[in-house]
Image 1 (spheres, rainbow, N blue to C red):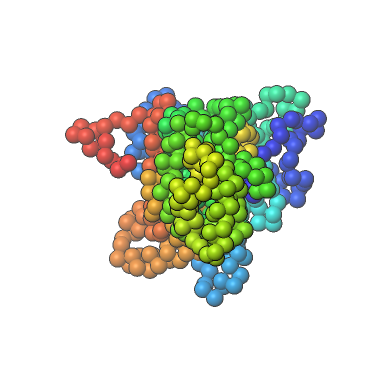
Image 2 (image 1 turned 90 degrees about the vertical axis):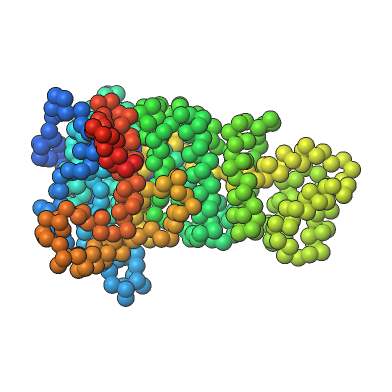
Length: 507
């Protein structure tokens, strides 16, 4: 997948890890060594871990002010610039304004650091930058959110990816050649859902195009995967993120998930993988009976979607060629012949009717040798083939996989990669996610409307993201991070007298 990469971890003699783009330090940007970064990472103070969760968010340092005057002049793209829309979205000044004014660096830090004080969970984490000229800069690491933000404002990447936590600072990897001292230690378990994997069954769009009809495939996948991860594996902290165009990513952030080795990751990916083989491989669902409880539960989740989103909206067997695919999945030749004869006499018969025809003709005795149990199982397999998640399991198997960060901007659509609340899937509209230019325009509009009626202190306390449609997505992320940190060692939420503290963050 273009938004995720896996790299072999064998360290060659020259100390450079494989798959690093040639000219990593030359054609891209010279990586700064750690001693070139300001040494302002505070050491954890004794007792500092006992901090209320409210304090993690209410008084985050406002480190935007030092660059605000320099970068705030980049206005949103005018409407007449839309013919060159992709160029506008990746315009350096537009991107710099987005990073400077809207990207939630502090919340990203708390999410990856698992503590309000800097730790190696963040300091040894790899970041990889895709620069404006297409160069790919890997093995970057930062002790604090401020230094990450400072470097991103300097390099102004078109996007960046997040990799694993290593046993040492990724910037120091070349000093550890011929040694196993530098190896990946932890990373969130991730899953990738991409609508291009559904091209053989979606009829509304192809390739990178999406619409509300085919987005239902992503909704179905999130429901099935999220339920399985919570109920079958006991994971609690699952962050779903819109990819910016045609898919979604899952980040399983529980400590137990982060510390899994490749074998365990592969086992979970295999557990969730049901659709196997290529498009020309024939029957792609081959599951044992009786069905595993996970598959029985998945069929219960998916049955309504099959009726509404597949049969009605996608109408997958309207054309004769596609209807032949359905017949290939049924077990009885005589029944198939009867169905084909009926459908040939009624061209363009809707898929809803064709699906009903299977049982109707079976009951008329169209086949004397029909095995009712085999037919039921075949129909269950059809439902799974057309609704069950199609996962890129290779993304999930390797600890060293890099994945696009939440809240970056997709260069093709300009949309921000925002979190998706799995409790509100029906209300998520991928085509309504704001673009970077829209967000910058909303800041300008808010300032014009409210700037004159508010004093300077009130205006400063309103963060720029709160002036835009990005606010609810940041709040979802903020709530997720708070919940995660409640379960991390050393972070406590202490209710105030009267119970006010328990409701302070409105989880």
